[in-house]
View 1 (tube, rainbow over the protein chains, first blue to last red):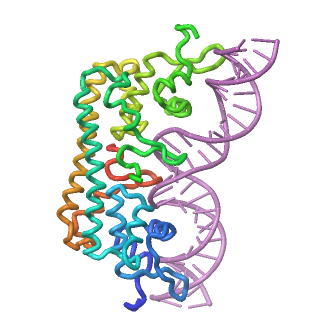
View 2: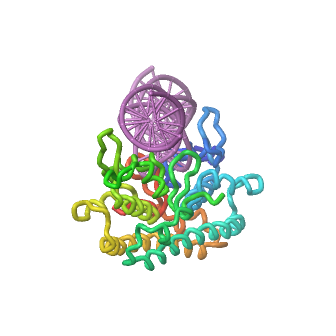
Length: 151
Length: 151
DNA sequence: GTAATTTCTAAACCTAACTTGAGGTCAAGG
DNA sequence: CCTTGACCTCAAGTTAGGTTTAGAAATTAC
């Protein structure tokens, strides 16, 4: 394949470690937008490798695909993050992560305070706090603590 | 209702804050086993309030329902955890939690080290570690980091 | 004794993030 | 020309943890 023709989906999959089906799914979710060649096949830019890497990393931080889409669409021209963009975005991701860690740490401290107290059945136990528990989102499944969307 | 007849499912739901449907679902998953009255309705012991509380707390620690079922079934006579049982179980839960926190903290440290380095597209970036990413479990959805079953 | 609640079962539906499968097209090698 | 492999679309399946719904039976309240 000539250089100017871009990457086929299989090549992109091999470069990123993602499944082909996942890449197509991300496209359906509006996270990536390849063009089509004469035969109707998807062709990707080299920068899309970075874009997919970004998506994978953001997922590790607990961002949902819609959230990632928003972050990406906030960039000028909806471009793949440059190093400077990444620097800016990192600050927000770090806050997100700090929040998750804080929640879990609080949970652990409560657990330590509770070990052996035998209060398990009491509404006043710090571990037994309904407001702190996972909340329903729509009519779907519950989210584990710290994985719930912030909005 | 007479004292000896036990709690109806609605009463148990009000006491625990769980939905009636959730309690029935837990029964289907083998987490709780009520008896039936003459009319075929479920009746619960007072201790089942504690049992459900335990389930809710364990969920916050990231345990899946099958994992919780295992913990509960490990108790003598499959009884609801007593304060002493709880003390013993807590140690295991704390280890579980420590692991999740450690993973997230490592992720955060990597992020800090990466801010501004511009390496986002490189396989050698610490954030871009496939082994660290969510793994497929069966043919279903992926699990977010730290939520994956340990086994 | 009747009305209003509650409960029952079973099956269908829900979200997120994908995967799998069916049925068909496209491109390259021999 | 033919085969092989990669690609296409669209629909349905998967997992976790439940909720919703429908129609019937049991309980409770007045």
